[in-house]
Length: 582
Image (spheres, rainbow, N blue to C red):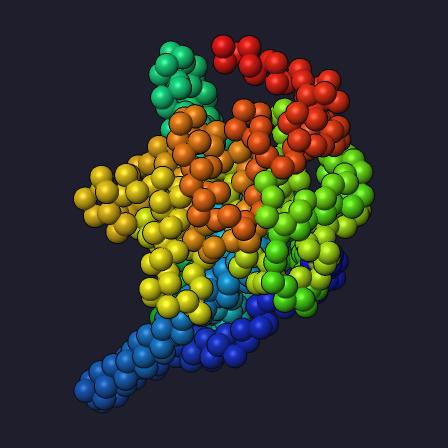
């Protein structure tokens, strides 16, 4: 059903990713060039009018107003259009990245998802995507604008008076050096802050999720100490960032004021000696102010860029990860026959399943029995196509599972996981999650009613004010554990499965309810092939086949009476459970 694909070479790097949006970025750069170019022109224009006025030439104030107003309107126009395109680009980048990540993860193995952890993947799809889309839509343009203003103002200063310009430009390296030293330390502080934030989130998450247990165990004090520690660390780290910024601003302000003071002194002399006009002097001061601002912008962008590069590296790691692509082309009408042939499974060099061989006949009831860590859930994962075996082959009705198309397979196989997967939607939407568009509305309702009755959910639904339209809260917190398990069973049955896989689904329901569910299941779905993972022997005594697993090995297989006679381990489990129930 699957074939391992190796990740592509690291060609999809950050800058090539940016280049994929070059058309919109070019539009933004052109608009930024226009807006900043006009801003660079304004000081010269004002200086020209000042010179005209100081030389007692007739000044048309109305014309000045129109010219400056027109320039301002153009700048505003450029900026508005730029912001519109920038916002569109930001959301497009975010949409594309989340779409690619979602598509990639939808094809990933269950093992990969578990190893990466849901919290890590959620961070990648939210905060990391936000960091990247921010730098693409705003950082690139801001860096271009800052560079344009820096170069343009420096050139303008040299054109007006190169002696004064050289005096100013000698101070610029000092400002850049100050930024470099302080931002280097701030970058480290930001990294520490991010790590500490993860610790705070982890402590808070543990405290909230286990709040009732913390109270029962009277462990509030220890939990508060853990939180106090990470909270104090956060305070110290952030105060360190504030201290560095509080050092940066006065130093840069001092250097800027020194430059202004030098210009006022030497520039004033040049104006008195008539080597520099008053208008040129005014323009020179304006360009000096313009010159300092881009240095601030570029410094802040460098920090944002480093964050975005780290975020993109995490995103790219997911996008370039190995995937399991389906190569199956067979559309199979499943009868329910299953065979494991020489199946081995290794995870992180550890052998989980060792040379597993068994056959299940269509329409029969099979139980996979064993203690914790016996390998039962791994058998479930392999049979459900959630992860590939290291070696060996799985057959469905004599056909290789790898050759069956996923759509054909999953449309006929009902899965009930040990952990309930409940969606924040109505009961009906949760049960009819695997919707078949080929069915009529009447057929869907018929399947829905039969699934609900079989899973013994009818009493629950009748007790709810809105019945099937009742909205289930996130993670099904307004349902009990047993109700969630029965809802999962109803979802699996709603597709009218040919093969039904149950992973310890009755662990949270009482014995009477369990018996009722199994009775209705065999009555309403007599042709289904049932494979049930369990740790209890009593409900499965009458099954056609029992597979006993221990430490990744299939120790014994057969019917209940045969196993009592031929398997010492099975007999010990049976006697242990009988004595605990008596």
